[in-house]
Image (cartoon, rainbow, N blue to C red; front, side, top):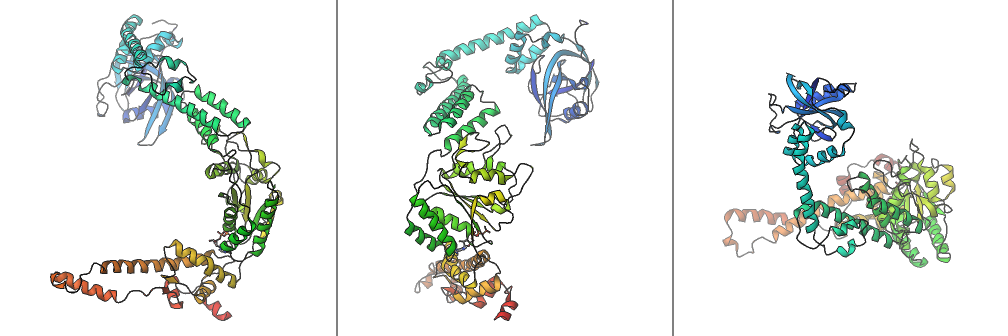
Length: 608
Ligand SMILES: Nc1ncnc2c1ncn2[C@@H]1O[C@H](COP(=O)(O)OP(=O)(O)OP(=O)(O)O)[C@@H](O)[C@H]1O
């Protein structure tokens, strides 16, 4: 051995690998699962601090890899010393490590010094270290080739002399070259080859000559499919009506994608980005229905009372009718919970014939929620505004910014500051989401915000909105809302009709005064839903009974019915005599039975 060559330690811990053969100058990823190898990783690689401790001997385990015997298997005598350059641990599906090992030089096992907890051997270095670290091209080529042929790889490993190694690998190279020649000859010309004329890698055309399809070419076929996909994507981008500036960015990304191996994680990220760019409604919008009379009828049909709010909404619509490109104002409905702020927002969208999208801002304390993450960020996504536009598919929806007063302020920037740009009619025509990194015109979006209080809304944000107070309801209003809206809505939701259930006015008043205490009507709606559920059970039971009774024997045929069935049918008919009377009318007894004892009974009595 040359004294100028780098020496590996004469004692090496041995890692027995079942898959792949590590050769000097190449790298392998080895999965460490057996207890012997796990021990080695724990005590040599995770605890060791010196570079020397990361040098291990890698020996192919030529025994059956599935049986991890107590006894150390007979070791292959030649191995490769390698440096573990990366250790990654995982618990799924069972505890294991993945090592990235770079081969340094071959060694010969002279003697196994100890077997437990992991084998350590006295070794003799066979190769000179720098011979490989200098990076001979031929050796590199051989390594790549030999990865595919395990048994040949072992032979290549055993071939210590360079001459012998060439002898072993030249047949492999010849085989590989023959295979490639055959592949080139037999690539069939695919029907959609026309498309491929415009591929970015014109070289591919040469690979396609009509003929038989060989199983060898599946990998290339996959790559071709991928190229086709990119071309399709490019076509879609060109047809997506994307504004010039954004189109430039997309084309740049397409160019990068074409030159990127699909195994790169960035390939998927770039593709997802481009797919989002295609899906965004850059210029797609719905046409507004600006009929004031119809709007008034619709608003009245959907909501009882709320005169002030409806008046302001109609004014807004009237101005829009006169001046189509009205900039702002942003309406903000302020009022206690359950007074219908959100549902009025939905009605406005319906009135205008626009798409509706609700963005809940309660508890949001990160501005990336609004603006998205930069694409360099792991797991980056667009913000809720861009996501919302993607899901509605038009650029002029009604966006309801719900609970704008409940936004927090965290370490990741102030979401209220991001909203300032979104809500400012002077700025929002060029809103830039961090993920998109190009501007999107939000000026056609109709923003409506809701809040319970203005106290917690930052002043700059408050200043951009027109506040409309929505007061809580009086008892009489609640009764009307329940009779006109809530009861029909809940009946419908539970598959019931007024033929099944009736809740008279007195009962509704009872529910409001004895079972709820709120400014809005949400709790009242929940109680009505509870009544509907209880009645639904009865109705379903009675339907089941009547279905059963329709199978009962007709009188006169009784003689043919067996004795035991006869008894059953008699009890059934007695049950049938007591069907729940339809409609079920909810009185105070029924109310107590379904909702329990009144919560505010004492006070209600005192008042009455
Ligand atoms: N005036 C009304 N007419 C008809 N239904 C109403 C009226 N007010 C409220 N509702 C109904 O009450 C329910 C609760 O309303 P909504 O969710 O819009 O309340 P909110 O004011 O947005 O509450 P929060 O502040 O908690 O978000 C909805 O089913 C809604 O249809």
